[in-house]
Length: 178
Ligand code: 5GP
Ligand code: MG
Image 1: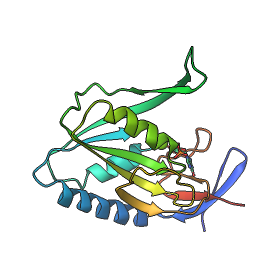
Image 2: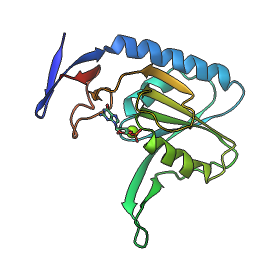
Image 3: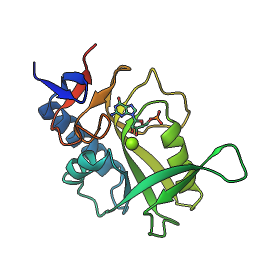
């Protein structure tokens, strides 16, 4: 089994690209069936979702648009809590059918923020498509409507996901070697 070393850690192949491709195509087919006659706006959350988004979109055959967003978190001046804002969303999403593209949903905290910020702009619907979901870690109630892979609570890299900046370019998904 192929292993890769990133910084101080070793990772071994977990999901080879051929399997990723098959699942991503199936996911695209579900979306095609569900969105017939509509014109969804895909919002891919950078950086991690860039490969997933690119491969998924090649198999979407309903009229659609795609845009790329980032979520920035900072500590508010007057409150102790963290404030989040969406960066890069220039489209008016009122009355649009939005599909959020996420690389991985772990605790769900990030997804909850993204969905909250998007809902505040009054789209007509919001669904979530994630390449990976860690069901054992997921603590939120927001439905993750489309999932390519459910995985255990291991740290993974590759296919867009990084370990401290490295590994996003890898074609397969790798998991950390214990
Ligand atoms: P959550 O907010 O759901 O706990 O975490 C989501 C974010 O944490 C993801 O967008 C991703 O950036 C990061 N993350 C969670 N699990 C993993 C993992 O196994 N590998 C990598 N590379 N990032 C992860
Ligand atoms: Mg992410």
